[in-house]
Length: 319
Image (cartoon, rainbow, N blue to C red; front, side, top):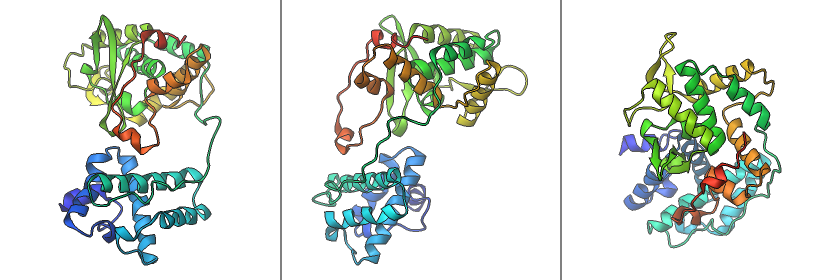
């Protein structure tokens, strides 16, 4: 159990006593950070948030889970406003609420004391991610020398993010078998946060770019990485998957070669694809499905319904 705990709670030496009064509660608490939260960045942030809340509770004499009421959670959240930004406070509340939900489902607690607590109002009308115009994105893609395997790889990766709104992490986690044929059309299977899989039909340009890359690189082993690093200066691909820093350096290099001054990064192509989709008449709710954006509400964890994205929708991305 010790190794598991260290994996789940990397920032602390021991589990918070507040959340581990019984073996059942301890097991459920550890499972929350190991089985339920798979993304390491989310796990780290939620670990810190929960540890901070536990410390606050103990300092205020709240030494058992049943003693915690909505007013206590609300008071704690309000106390954060003097030192944390609104997005950080909302993340703290989300961590506490999700943990209590997990404990309720595991019958450790009868109800969630954080369910009725609301965080600070926060909204932004425009994101900070640099976005390319359609002609810039087209110029960047067309400027890539596809006479090399690396060029074919880079074109396929950039197009994947543009035409499927894929997160860079989801794209780089793909294996060769995640490009497949269904209903006479090429589909891709993205490996999203938390280990979830998200399937998308391919835009006709992406279809062409992916198959050109797969054929030239002779990638046939299904469980091997799709997007691989280059083996030294040989111009050939290695067996190792690209990392996000690898992708960022590639993108900056390709942007410079194309004469693009906008300081784009890994997330820019996702934002570019969504912007162009909406500009060409796409619906916001369909864009949300295509981008696989999560609902902040806990009920979303239990919703197994899926909405099919039609090929007509992906073809609205005119680049």
